[in-house]
Amino acid sequence: MGTADDEERLARAAWSRIAEPADSTAGALVRAVGPVDALRWVESVAVGGSTWSPAGEVSTTRASLTRATVAQGQPPPSAAPVTPAGRGEVGPTVRVGAALAGPAGSAAPAPTGTRHQQGGATGQPSRDDVTGSPASVRRAVVGLCEVLGVDDPTVQRRLMSAAGRWALRAGRVDPEIDLTNLGRLGGRLVVPGDREWPTQIDDLGDETPFCLWVRGTVRVDEALAGAVSIVGARASTDYGERIAAEMAAGLVDARRGTVSGGAYGIDAAVHRATLAVGGVTVAVLAGGVDRLYPAGNTALLRAVVDRGGLLLSEVPPGAVPSRVRFLRRNRLIAAAGRSTVVVEAAWRSGSLVTARLAAGLGRPVGAVPGPVTSAASAGSHRLMREGVAVCVTDVAEVLELTGAAGDGVAELAEQEARRDESGARPDDGLDDGAIATLDALPVRRPATVEALARSSGLAPHEVMSALGVLELRGQAARSEAGWRRAGRGR
Image 1 (cartoon, rainbow, N blue to C red):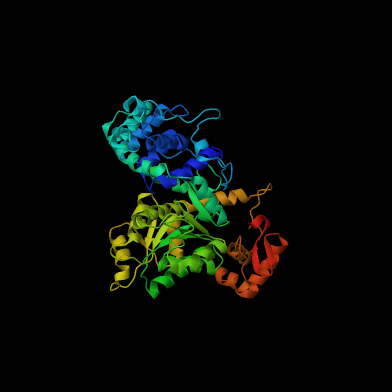
Image 2 (cartoon, rainbow, N blue to C red):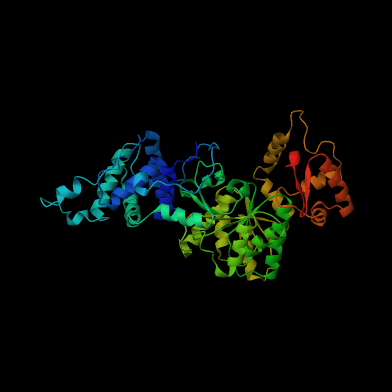
């Protein structure tokens, strides 16, 4: 699959405003006929259920997929691998009307026939043809199911319910405005098929976001590669915040990023600690990326963008972070991380939802134990007792947990990729001190000798000696800010 064209990019942006997050019916429809044809259809519903036909041929496979996913609510088979071919860009310049026009040279199907025939000789629409009325929605759904070859009444009922709510928004959507607002923030839209699309979130099946609205300079796929999601209570304790910060800093030392939700408490501790040691952290927001919520974390969320992290959202700029969107945002946090760790959680907590969603996706889940008398840790203990999570007490155990997701295989593949033509590895010919220093060197933000000593477990003079060797080999680069990887060591 190549980079999405402007029509598809606009259509996906429009769907992110038309449908609420985790709308599996919308996801199944878009998967069945494609985002552009799906948008054309819902526009036809919004103007009274006019005649619609897809711009491209709908295959039997797509019809079968629709039957399976829309009727039964089952996640579809894994999508075919996406071939990296481009970068997500802000700036589709096609107007919405053009996006609905279908292939070059064709026009979007005009509202015809039904409205005028039933409206009598005057050509006025009848009562049943009012935009989004039950009758018009029913006609549109019946027509869609005929095209798809779907005759299951359950499918029709589900689509009629969904189409009624989509039609209310479809006529008022202008993705160009959303993209313009995103561009003013220095953000970009990332869609499936873009090189930086994080393919692990495709595990969400028909609940996969239509697109990601992004602020920050690092690529999304790179920020999330091997990242760990750390979540917990907003009303956290000093103990919980300290553990979360230590784990986040340790993950950065292990060259991993962190993912959390940008909220008060544990989320904020994770983001702050990651930034403090020069790591990459990703905050997944429930509202638009222009809505820095909660207000008390505004400075922190701005720092995430300014200091090499990312703000991600599946809803467009201006979207309000509602209670339902917070709950549905949790599935994205669960899918984005290689594993999920719950530091503190009350007996009933959104963090428990995230943990269970992660487990359902096949991600390893860890929970940090707390005092048995602490209500803030009751949920964490519950996860362990129910077998959803395993006990983790430090970053080494988090890394061990994360390795269960195939990290060893990934490390071997990375080592093979680093081989040069002679078959040598970056650490060939190095003593233990130099290898430890090389492993501790960050890829992006330079680190001081003192920080490298803490990370590697070596004395500062041992680190300095090793850095001299690595610099001569072209594997370490020095700047005023400190040391980082360079050349073959990157």
